[in-house]
Image (cartoon, rainbow, N blue to C red; front, side, top):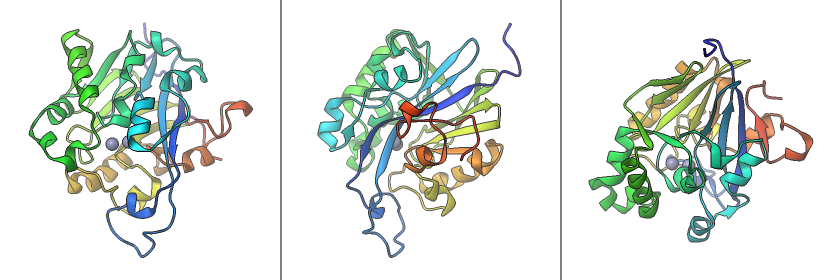
Length: 268
Ligand SMILES: [Zn+2]
Ligand SMILES: [Zn+2]
């Protein structure tokens, strides 16, 4: 019998970074500081419960890093091992969306079922991919790989909101991609929402200034309100790419300082 009030430990682990970046790369609207430096970090996340654990997103691999000029610090497999999760045995991987930096490491999860919005697969295999502005953050090889997983019966399609387990719910947001979803996790400090790319940085949602990659900008902005509605407080929303996450939340232990953070405890 599963515990209806189960709470999860929740972790972010940084796996990559890109230091050479300015504010104009991260915001749609100019604010007079477009040339100021603003690095971006890349994370995988995990919710660890008494009986079940969920991995959220899969990172990217060395080929993607080389192709796109990102610094890969560790693979998803190595990142998750640092918090005691064996990627090869992980049964459930939630895929927030199919951009290369969220799905590129999918091969490291040979036992997993991938949880994905139906609309996201439609987006990644349909006419919008003929347009470089839409297709650029996707890799054809990743999408082809995921189609193989569909035929193997290893993709669980979701349409809108769904509950994977008591304390773990998925919520369709759209905006950034056609099928962008976020994950809400019950923790001992309340409901924490992993926004992933529904808000790359704290400032995207706080200033209502979207990151300059989107399928629909209006839905991206509405998504910020949805995040607030889902989380116990604005402090319970975790942006997908913000270096501030590691600055605000404590490391699980001394050795993981600057690498991983506990998101189920209050920010420091
Ligand atoms: Zn994205
Ligand atoms: Zn991303």
